[in-house]
Amino acid sequence: MQEFLTAVLAVGVVLGFMILIHEFGHYAAAKLLGVRVEVFSIGFGKRLLGFKRGDTDYRISAIPLGGYVKMSGENPMDERTGDPAEFLSHPRWHRFIIAIAGPAMNILLAIGLLAGVYMVHYEYPAYLDQPAVIGWVEQDSPAAKLGLQAGDKIIANPGDARDGTKVTPVDKADSSRPSGASAPAK
Image (spheres, rainbow, N blue to C red):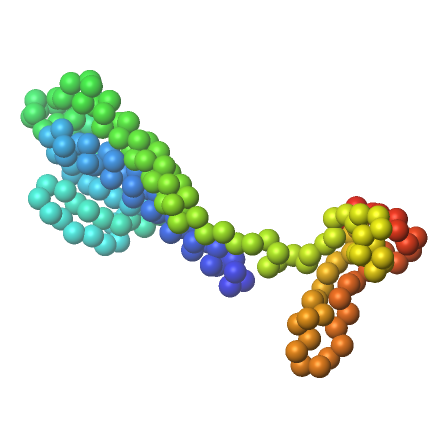
């Protein structure tokens, strides 16, 4: 149950961050182009907490399944006053830039995150999680003479038995194979 709650919380945090970036794109473009922003909200519904600075109410709302930026005069059903700070008072290309700024910020976030991941480039070797398995053995090689076969798992290095215990170096994956026959790695 704890893992489920952790997963739900992680999804909520990631989704919330993506929504914040998306809505910030709309908000920043609107402010840059002189549109009055009345509400910047993460979530929908009843306001839980927030603050008001200037004309904008910054808030976190009750239903955390999205967010919105409410701009002055953005609803075409409302009566227009002709105020130059209203959304519909701006030319179409301004409105287009404001509309496309949210998805553009999500794209920039994805590019930035991928660039950051590839710059850090943390490699985790696969052999730390999986046993070493012999892929093939050449005939008449020292390994073949020892009886090693394809598919055998190497579970220890005999040189690592520092405490004096006997170490079995190879786990025969399939003891029914005839000596010298090769089998695919499992």
